[in-house]
Length: 250
Image (tube, rainbow, N blue to C red; front, side, top):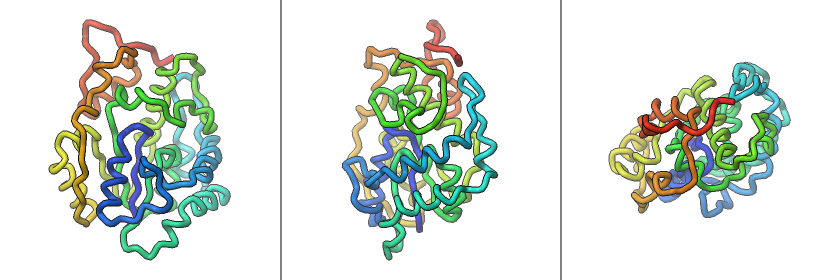
C-alpha cells in the first residue's frame, strides 16, 4: 500500500503522519518533527514546474482544467521520483509520505500514482491560518494571486487556492476526507473509518482538544467572506450574522 496525506500546512496533517508511522507505515527518511519527508527541495521545485499550468483569471479565480489533461513534464516526474527515493526504494509492505506541498501538485500526483490511497485532511481555515507556513505566499511557488500586505489575508488566499485546487480537479480512485476536528474530538470513530479505508490497524496517538477552535480566542481577525463556502461545505461554524466577514473576493 502507498498512502499520502493531502492538506495545507497547519491543517494538522502531522497527526496523520505520526499515526501512520506509529502503525508501521514507512513514511520515508529522514522525517522532521512534523512528520514531513525531507529534504523538501525537489518537491518545492516540482511545485514551480506545476504552477504555470494553472492560469490565474484574476481575483480569486484560477483555471484548473489544464492540469487534469496536460501531459506531465518529464522534469516534474524526475523531481517527484527524486523526492520520494527513500519511499520507492523501501521494501516495506506499507509506505507513504507527507508534506503539505503535495497539495500544490496533487492532480499530477494522482496521475503518477493512481493506485495510491489519498487522505484529504481539512481543518477550519480560521485555525489553519493562525500560524506562518512556507506556502503563505503562493508566489514563492510560482502561483499568481492578488497582492496584499495583509499577512492573514495572504494566508487565507493560500488556503482558498489549495482548497479550490482539490475541489476543482478529478479525485483519485482511493480517496477519503478527514476533518482534523473529528480526529481530535472523535478519534476512535475517525480511526475506524481510516482503518477500513487503509485496510490496516492504526495506532492511537495523544490528541489535544484545545487545538480545536483556537481562532475564537485569537485577537487577529480571521473571518473572510471568500472562505464561507468551504466553511459551509464542511460543517464549520459560520461568521455571526450580525457582523460582516472580513474581505471580499477582490
